Length: 333
Image (cartoon, rainbow, N blue to C red; front, side, top):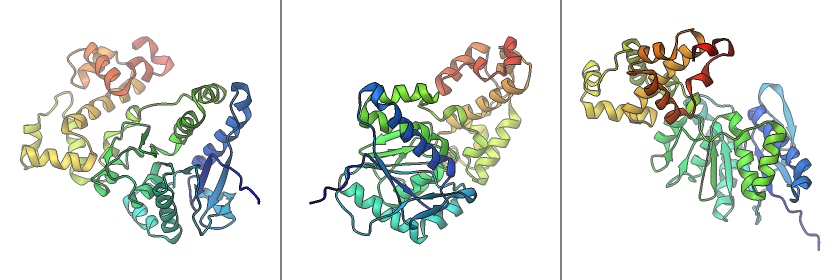
């Protein structure tokens, strides 16, 4: 009797997938196999499946060989991974989830999870997990500009846009497409231990990040919501004065409770969180593009002094003002 090969990972690639996300997945697994002996662990094994046949067309005219996804589900202990799909707008996501290959992938992911398997996805591919009903009652993340949409589509999920990777009950999600690196390091660490992940990080010069917060732009966090876009523009124009919740509600002719509800629905965050993001966003721009001192920048964005700005940056983005300075401006930090 022929014993089927054992795999640690199953990569499920859909047509139009983000090429970098697919390539990172395979490159990191290949690198892990190369260095595994040096840390005395077995080399990981993987396979690439597709719902589209033996060759998958990725984005930008690239393609990859794959095995057809079996029509009959089998017992499988591998971690299923879906690289990012390269989708950016709610319309694109809604349309993509209705296509035949996506529906097949959704059913396969649901079946694997129901049999106790682990599923993982990054960026817009997280919406496949949502469509499969796998995010309800769990915590998850995705690309920070898609997080509000994911929260609206799955109200029973706690969407944490600040996190780069989140694992909750055998469902692992990651942020933007290049967070596939963080996702793969996390999965390799979980499956093979920290020694392999640490060695791989040094070999690839990849430092697994825990947060997306340093990369969030408030104007994009509004995710196309007209009211929130107007709020962001109004607050940015008001700096260094920071409007109160009462001022903002009055400006937009709604009650404070309604105003806060609109902000939460559009961004997944509180009004105070949105205001802090706007201030820090302006501070980052000034740090990167001006020769103003940190004291002057703090004043420009409404902090009482440079110490308050430094403390808030460390708390919210885990960095100091100096880390956002170009080398040429270092003296002004």
